[in-house]
Length: 305
Image (cartoon, rainbow, N blue to C red):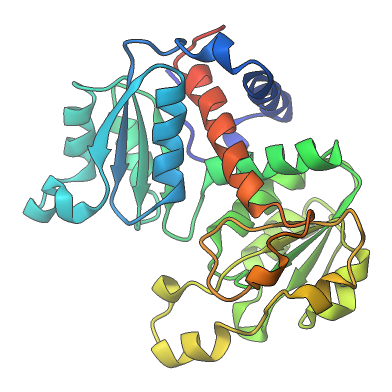
């Protein structure tokens, strides 16, 4: 039995195979419509989520399976003091596979150690978000045709953004990927990622404050929101939340085939005026997320179609 805690739990070869399966699901949805008949996915979400939870549920339903679960800790026995370890033991009696989101880093790992069923980390604190990373990789590969030889800009909250940290870890395994990190001083990439991931793998990167200066050189721009829930100080959040706003004027500086990704939800960092720009692919990205989660569920349940 296998679980997924980090995007690095899959080798590059396994990840490529997962994306190939997702591509086949996109091309042949009817072939997979009953692949999970009789199977149940549990979604244990200890903090609010729209896209990730619904994406997992939609993925299982489109495979012919069923779902059960809770959407916040308030609606679970966590309010009575039940541990994650006990909750997963109970859920293992009902479901065949589980997706868990938790505000505490490492909580899904605790669940995995006690679980009788595969556990998918659907986001733990500021730590990892592997299925968002798989979504991002599938989106880039589908639109650019490759995951190597790319210059990728990451803009916004690079300090607390778990999606950014996960994606960097995954992309350094591909040839000739360069990074441009765009953030205010207070939200710069953590030192451990700079040292342990980038420098250790001899990855080319630069850190800048101004988005306009680097836009013309980018193949992908990965925008992120400044996350209110990760701040201890409301004043700092208010000061930084509108530091970057991607609008039509800035998009004029970008290549005609530079795609804009965003893990969503967005607040103010991408103006709605660029939603109709064919390079703005964040809603397409959501759809790719459902297909890669379908492929992942099949993989972890050892179902071949």
